[in-house]
Image (cartoon, rainbow, N blue to C red; front, side):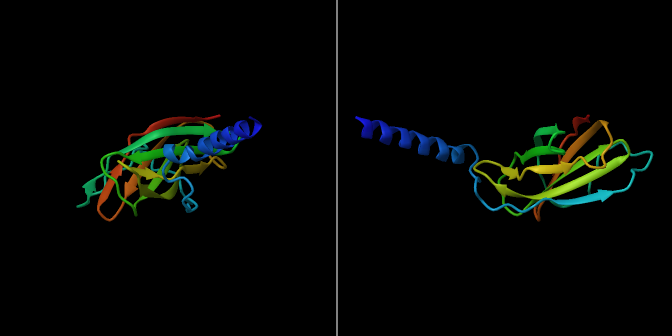
Length: 156
């Protein structure tokens, strides 16, 4: 009876651990570190919304699923996806704009079952002013381009 209980416990443990791959199918794949770039102060007429780029590329419908400030970790974490196709090889770029500062980070995107997922994007809070700002995510590949709606964030 003890052997059966032990076997059942081990089976449940292994099932719960491997179940994570069902929630995020790209779990465990090597990831590239986001690259960080900083730009100077925006022009006084800048509204914080990226200007559309003239391109012959197809449209990418970019959606920000979550944009959260984690002050204790010193980051803004942005989770985004492209909802209208699935492809590998694209790049997602998260851009924070607020308090006269603009900061961008990029990471690769990869196909999922029904869409294209951006690897989590982390914007470092160091040097960013406290207060209200916004985050947008753009997607760019050889064939597709798109920019999300702005998501408001507040830095404490």
